[in-house]
Length: 132
Image 1 (tube, helix red, strand yellow):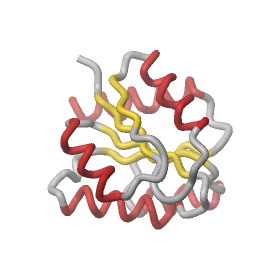
Image 2: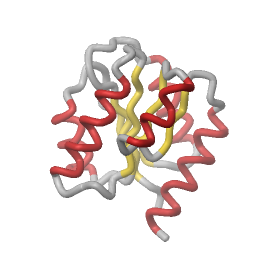
Image 3: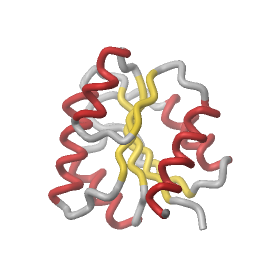
Image 4: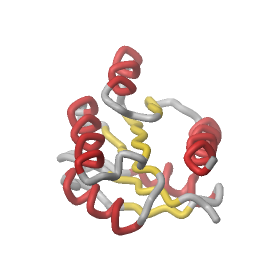
């Protein structure tokens, strides 16, 4: 059974090409992927994650609000008693913010330029840890 992954675009960012490429790469690697589309509220992302019983929520953020949006998502999942759902984040993220994202609860961070192979490998390892 493959892990279920929710790929979401939180906030007002309307550009979703990268998110669609990531969703397709994960699907092609054998994951079951649910893509929410653009401009999603954190509450809706958490609700969908719970309804779809996902192992991972992947946030695609290009707007520069990655720290606040990631923290709000992690906090909302914990408040919903779903803190076991890993949150990963990718997009336009300065290297200097990677450690900050990990500190607020992101399980992994994929800045622009991360190869799809690296992404798939890291998500496989993350979902294997959750099962194991």
